[in-house]
Image (tube, rainbow, N blue to C red; front, side, top):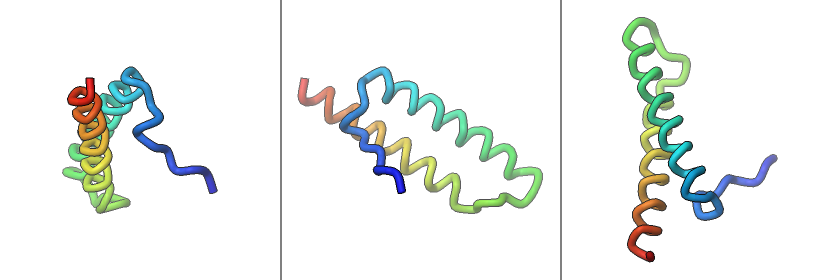
Length: 65
């Protein structure tokens, strides 16, 4: 198994890119689910949680600065 990726070890640029990519993935997941049955019905929930983790880390860094 690989080591779990931590948000605290990422740079600001990496967090911003991860946020943009995850939001785009959520958008495609949302619209692809409208046409057919989704393979992973929990994928949107997982993506929203990932977005929340990134935003939380960005906010914590902003308050610390």
